[in-house]
Length: 433
Image 1: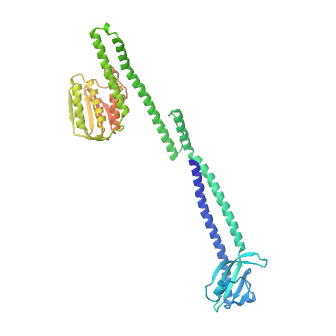
Image 2: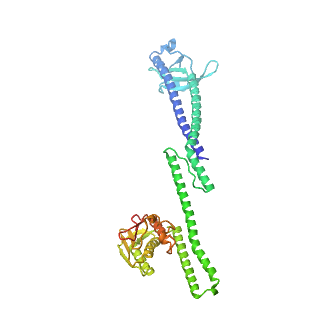
């Protein structure tokens, strides 16, 4: 059953319950009012006859249409002939109190009639019985029932039609969202957008859906660029390796120095490919299935600085690390710190030290190299981006991109600045982690 049908049924059911309750209440209120009017009239008639029972015998009455009967304690009857039962006789003998009731009696043609009757006791014994035919009330109530049933059915039908129209108009944005989602699934094209208007919840849903499609489109475009860039970066060392292998097939024609250079090139290209694949895996893995835990960041940075000293023995390393604890993934944080130090080590060739500072959950790495050109600063954290000055150096352009991925995964940021005196200063802030 569709949501539209369910909404229509709910609307009709609610109206049906409300109208049925109102109809039942109306019916019983009208019935009570009609009966109350009759009871008041025959009650007044009975009160008059209680004061002067002789009017029953003489037939004097201001209440035309009523049947009045005088019932003695011994059971004698005077006045109009009416059905007298044991209940009326018990009232006449003083064994029961007076009462109002409904009875059915036949006329001379044996046609049954509905009567409203009051049996009122007399002071000295006996009772006055006054009845009135109320067939007209039954007829009026029957007409009222028919009218209320027709009105109820009409109201339910109108509610069902209105519910169908309202649900159709209300669910139109949802249907558009469904159609758009089906088209995106079928065509795999997230450029689809859903028109939105107004400021209600469904308009917000449409806006959120469009935002999701935009994010999906951007993600797919980033993925396509990533695959294209990765393919391009992998093609370069693979081509070089294939070329060197082809040359080595003619090893007997090469002197030892040439063979040594070729093997050195092969080793270098293999290392570059290994580093590139490692970086790609780092970016693809993210923080999936990695548990965060407290990390003593100063100790982690100190161990990475020791690695950097071994990797770049010609570079001086000056660290000033304050005790700092953060919540994070140790392996990812270590990778980010290493990439910052490796980047600084590659650019430091003038004998000046690399300054590593950790304070207030913020790590800064400052080198005294040529620095980063202003036009390159906003791109240095992009994947595969390499400044023109860096293209002659080994690397894939993924190191600083990984740093940004790690920083954002830990709720932090990474920025690059030009410090006084030249060089570059990279600032990794984990204040939100």
